[in-house]
Image 1 (cartoon, rainbow, N blue to C red):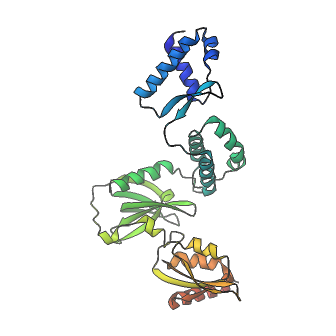
Image 2: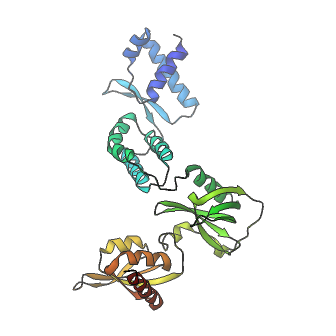
Image 3: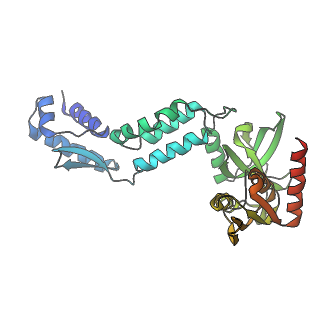
Length: 314
């Protein structure tokens, strides 16, 4: 066995997280420990010349050598949380979820992987993706590149009841909310930013048609998240409602929300928030008798009308 093959074998063992010991390697390859020490020197030189994010470190307590990373790493705790969040989202096909989880696990050592795999085994086995079953990884990445390069695109889009339409849009932001990925894009036909579910985009291609937009029409997705619920834009309102539920549930749902009054005798609080009306109404109705909208009056009236329509169903 020549030196190059021996050094590659040692390097492969190190890259897979194994602890290697000088004497054991000398016995395995029928060479002296001094030869193995030279192999270690060659491996160190290779790491340095290739600017790899590793360092060959001697573990005195373990009596051997291991590769340690010089790059900022993700902890096993963070990897577990990311996998749990991904599984709960149900956003990816089964194949894409497998690819994503396996990729995340490869960011940590085999020992850490062996700790996490039993924890996620059951959820992974019973994972059920959403019914659309559309692959999203490449689509989301491609749209992100169009956003970066301010590239207009023409899409074939499947609307809610299956109708296919063609739209030329300027993608501005991608947001994940309530199981789905959405691209927020400026549509010059309607002269406003609209929301398109990525899984409903059946085809897209770049276009040379320029789409100008004013500064006021640009999207700030971070700011948008402060006001929007269920990806329903509507009209921005200064909402005020009395709430008998767990206050944190409402405060978490509306990031701009603040408690402005407390009613300890009733077990209620008064909450004020700036939000979009359509999505806010959807959430408030889901809280049943725990909610009483007090302002604005027009919105309170629309809530009453919706409740009357609901009651008429029964």
